[in-house]
Length: 177
Image (spheres, rainbow, N blue to C red):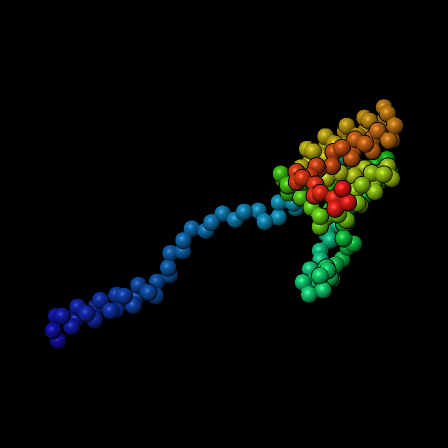
């Protein structure tokens, strides 16, 4: 056998073995938190437990059907806030959690049921708010408690309404104006 032939065979065997060795995988990219709202829910629940509240997390999972133009197979009524329950004084609590920095999503047209639920709870003298952190929940609740004790329930309702996220989008012009 010629040296050239041996060299080609040796190179082919080396290439074959290289392909058989496990390949070094590229470093994985760090995943972004795909459910940042869940972290806010956990933090708010932890805060509420310290306060002695009895709360439950409700997930209104639904599947949108493009053909019928509506949500199907949902477990909760649309608009149900993420957290509901009562505090240690028997006051109904409704908390809608949003991802950090995403409070304005509460004002989207598709969330009108959430908006109505929160506003209705406030009108009925419950405690309802939209938060993106446990710190914001703590701030709103403490100030609401002071207003409720020192002033009247109307002032407390006005405070909670004033703490709802404000739409950053300009209102659309009325066709009747």
